[in-house]
Length: 222
Image 1 (cartoon, helix red, strand yellow):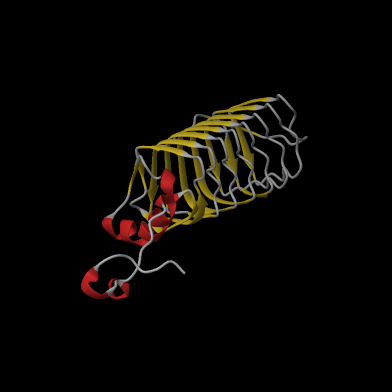
Image 2 (image 1 turned 90 degrees about the vertical axis):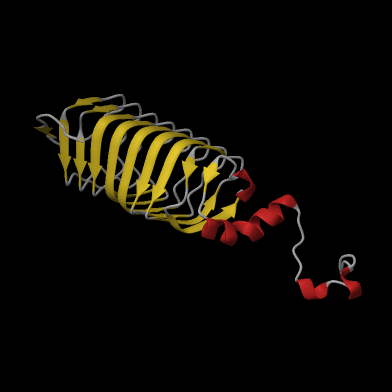
């Protein structure tokens, strides 16, 4: 994404419902700042610290966020549209109920990302690590994972449409494997997921040598 001329952030803190147009935030410590409902249009955030920042219902539009760091950043019900998130280091970020549209997440590590009830459309996760992301009740449409580690993801009650998981390695589903309808996986991934899918469907899988003599019937239940 190419941004036009930007003006440097002058400090002084963020403001709720603030309007930031064409602003460049460089190495700014925004710990605990309250910018709920703020709008960031054509902005760049580079190397900023967002620990416990309050960005509820904030809007990031046509913006680039590079090298940001934060624990407990609050982005509930926020909107990210036409955004690049590059080399982020975030933990426990609250994005539940958020809308992500045309977002490219590249590099970095996101731990315990809360996307419950969020809507993701035209989103790419590339060359990053997602640890225990929570997609519970979220809708993912045209989402792709490229060279990305997806560890212990929660897909409970999620809805997937045109989601490409072939580039997720490893692909670990902690809950909601039965919600993978609408996703594309590789043959090798399908084999790895088979036990989870069988459990979701209530299918008992037993070795061939446990069959009764003559190959008839199933083994007795314990």
